[in-house]
Image 1 (cartoon, helix red, strand yellow):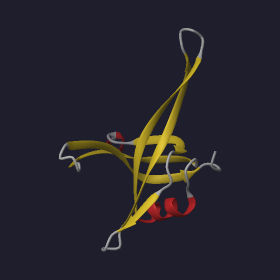
Image 2 (cartoon, helix red, strand yellow):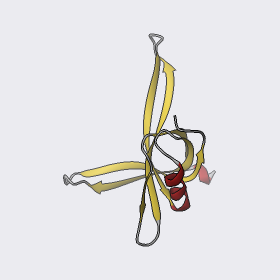
Image 3 (cartoon, helix red, strand yellow):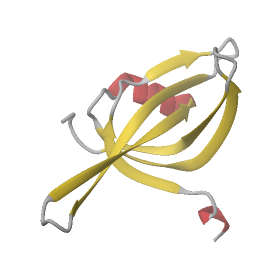
Length: 112
């Protein structure tokens, strides 16, 4: 049960093309966004779709695979852990960001 304490699983479509960065140490990181949709019927009987956006961070071989094979619109499934960090923006304001560090990536289909 310990492994479930910080575990995220999502299926969705990429909202951006993967952006890979290589460090001097040889490590590679890829960042991209994932859109997940939830559809429901409101009180008026209208079909409504809510979209949530998630920031993904991939390291190492997973980062290389994402950069090589994925593009905006690709449908994927991911498993990872939720992380938060803070930084100071160019305007001097403290900014907070929540990201999912991806451990596993599964390519589900062609881009939509």
